[in-house]
Length: 216
Image (cartoon, rainbow, N blue to C red):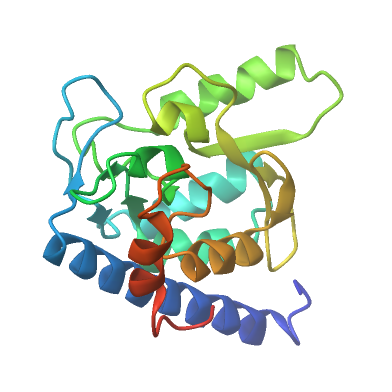
């Protein structure tokens, strides 16, 4: 995919995936707000949050920094940062109080919800900790809390993308490892909430949310 004969076309495909993903996220946010969903932090106070923060003015510089520091980075990661931004769909649904337990979609790479804080020192610290204790595993760029932390319960390591990786798609590590695009498709197929929370209203709510979303 990095061959000059194919790279531009491969990046264009990844960019289209990101555009579709963003449209799906915008639809999900609109539908959830119409249903009375509250987007909030995974804390005791339920602090309100903005669910989607678009790319910032230094996006290209940030992508270049990721590539130089951890790279090469997958093309889908570049596309996501440049086109989608950061998404945080943790919250509470009025008809489904356990919604935060269903692993709502979170992919935050650039730290855009905290514009006054530079995310790069945090990412570098994660990288240095991995270099000190690699434990036979590749470095994973943290992009989301695990499903327990999303529900304000002490849990495990954050979800991450394996780096370096010169492929078009990325390897997403949650409870299991799968391609990033496959992970996103599963999330959209379930209306943004891929894990069962044990609530009898979950599937009625998520089925309506997922209706008509675009394949990525």
